[in-house]
Amino acid sequence: MAKLQDMFTQARRAQNGGGMGFLGKNKNETKARAAALVVELEQITAGSAEAALKAGADGILFNWDGKGGTQLEVLKQEIEAARAHSAQTVTGLNITGGLNKLTMESLKDLKEQGVQYVILPFNAPARLLAQETKDLEKVIVVPMRKEESYPLYIRNLTAFDNIAAVLLDFDLGEKTGAMTIEEILDYRAVREAVRFPAFIYVNSNLSEADAYTINTLGIQAVVLSAKDSEEGTREQIKNLRTLLEKVHQDENDKDAPSLPSAGRK
Image 1 (cartoon, rainbow, N blue to C red):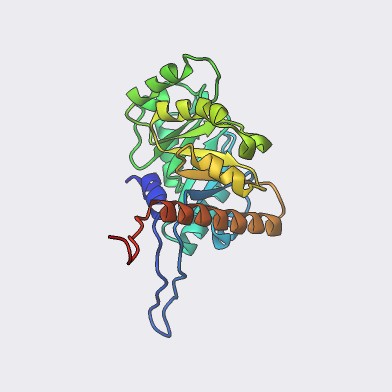
Image 2 (cartoon, rainbow, N blue to C red):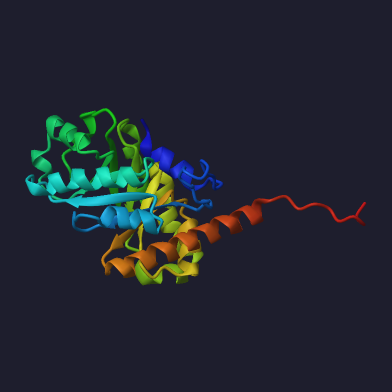
């Protein structure tokens, strides 16, 4: 099933609060956001995923260096805890090493751990795109290059059927909010060329100007790296979620048709 598409769609839908009576669980009201919020955990540690979800994350992205052992055992436990908190949680794995050793069987093993999508770098073996694994989606990292022919070149990714989304490695950094229309067009050309739903990394101190600039790229999910303390990360998640809600609300206000005044004929 297309779990990523479900996450992208749910982020843009408001959900009213509800309950099941005095003994049932209450469901908090959820506001629509301009993009889904994914928190990347640099290390697979107990309790970190659930803490991020409680703070407002829509999905969790783990990092894995391709080595087995206790990492995968803790990964499964973390995913189970995350799903216990929210059954709709979408969990991914950013594979940073051991790519040449990945096989169909190892991808199936990752799915058995509860992983729903994997992120593969641009230099990953091409055979991985042809190795279809049911219920395990693939996200490809797309680097930014300034060559004039690059958008035409990168458009060839659309020829592959087994790509669910892309991660735009644009490294916008601190300059995002000050970018000009001319500058953003270079990035937009690459974004339009790939056509798949897109993730993008954002800074922990994302400003309102940054958020509106990133929104011009047509992004479906933002990725926040949890590099701070647990309390600091919690605040960053809450602030970013509030900012995404504001951007979405402003979009709706802009697109809403205006009613003619009573005195106008």
